Image 1 (cartoon, each protein chain N blue to C red):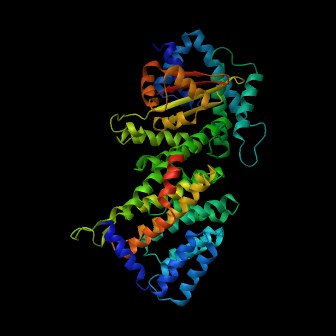
Image 2: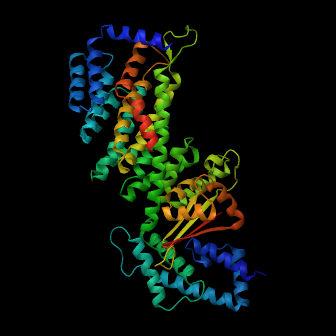
Image 3: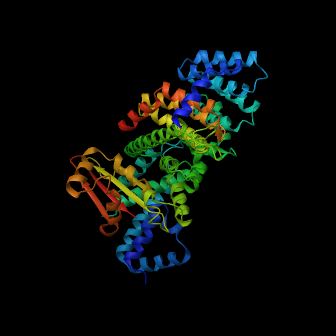
Length: 289
Length: 251
């Protein structure tokens, strides 16, 4: 099969390309080469010389991408906007254009260009689910907390309904930062609906109530805990990874607990109630509820 | 009759939310609480301490009306300092009560100012969540690169569409096409983290992959040799598979 494909591949290279196709190919190669100015130039050329070409939508899209790559964010946002308005039927590129626009808007808002927040807010109510969820993750990253909190309802939706574990865990972390009460409600809903709650353990151990890890870290100089976090059990692996090297070493050497069996150790905590790790710098307490 | 243990549990639950137990209980529990406090001297003393703290908080959540965003951590510290300065509470509940008073002060501040913004995380907590996020990004990046690799292999070595003789075009890339959309979204989600993690080479690789993924997303389910070959050519010329292997190993 490979030999057959190679032969046809060679033949296809010998076939004469249409001039508009050749220009678009140049533009794409320029993008791969990070030659943004050339990419923009080629796209402009295609639009100018072949206004009736079937490749016009792509030319507009890649022009916007060229502007994005060149770091001309505001112009890129406008170019994507032009593409989205002129070619609403091009579904394959529409979603990518929309998410690119949202990512650019986040950079601009964080740089003080508050007017672009309107674009991000529109993304939060976009009818396309991937765009809406992407917008929420972008908004949650904004350094202005009041803006970032606008993402909370969609973040809750992601925790409750998203099938991709990556995106769901991202939304959980964002809610840990922004609103632990909303996270708690989302986890309880998720548990009640019988959907996966604890990541890779979900298939074998569904729970009617959401389960949590409470992590308290006491540094020697303070009276109360320096870190007092209630984290969904689903993020248990990330809690382990985020510990400093010394407590991880202690866990490994003194209790035989490492990343591989951390889940089992957490499960056993139900009986022992609390896992305490003492190092020179801190005392770490992990409890499960 | 309500016992000390249950009395403490009721209070703990209310205090954990920063609520005045007197305001937050249902009628039945509030009545049981009153009866118990009337009979048990030790619990009565605790209740008096709590009441005093909540009175203190109610009297003035701020020393002065805040302008602009509320400095939540400062409000918390100020409440604790004021409670300590006024001599109470004492005993083993001391820090739990002070924490509850601080939470209540924030709740009153919210009511008073109309703000619903919860307190910002303590710096050590924010730092811990940062580390969790970095671990997550690293894990996601590894998954994204691995899935991209699988997709590229699917495009480089496609199978013939149904009803077509083996080894002949058009090629069935329907699965790759579907997955490329999902991977594009994951790539966009990952992009800020790759920047923060200083995985600059992964960032550059991800940009190259994006263009290929856009092209794959645009293929029809049964694609011509010409279209598949063009993508294959990019993959080979840019050594995308080798670069993917290297980063996967690194991550």
